[in-house]
Length: 291
Image (cartoon, helix red, strand yellow):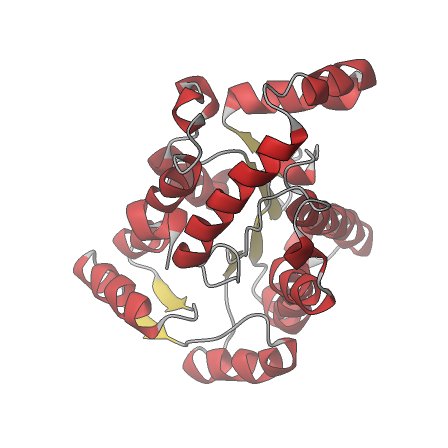
């Protein structure tokens, strides 16, 4: 109900294609807005099921509610929720709090794994697809987002392993239309310029210096997610400029070190900037997983 989906509508695009939709988030008010938008755009049906994905113990009940609506199961499981704590870990005592860390891991990683486990039987019956919103931080970390990057590394590691396991198992979920694609698709997005992200970034006085080439377009990222239902890629990097930079940092450790020490302000100032960004992000729901 926020970010990519709220502005350019991953759900809205599925609705325009006449899909049967089940949409989920914590915010009932935001879900009502998305529900209305989906109906206006021609969805065959829309059902709203509010859920806090940090409550792992409730997800089996959530799965049962979904199957009550669609007893046959789902064709595409879109895992697009998340919390985004951006700040150097050592400079942010709150990010070291065990309860906070546990909550972020529940939202960004453990709920993805549990939902996959719960829906896998119906996905296999229907030869379905799993779409996972990952991050460039899941490919190459940066010290300004240690906690967030750790969850995304776990996410990428799990779903890349699952891609392999489904192929070895010869699962219906792994049967692809083309020999070079699989049906677990991971979207390794960089900086996507949503309205919420713009507010967070521009709370940094130097935020407006981020070049346009490094900013991902919201509409394009939504199109990428929708087209995956046809193209079935295993991994998509976007935007391209950030993708190239990420690959350089992976292949050349020296370049990775150079990029780290090239940060244009002292560590203490980064902590202060991160705190301002954290305050703005908290209001938007980024820090506590309200997206």
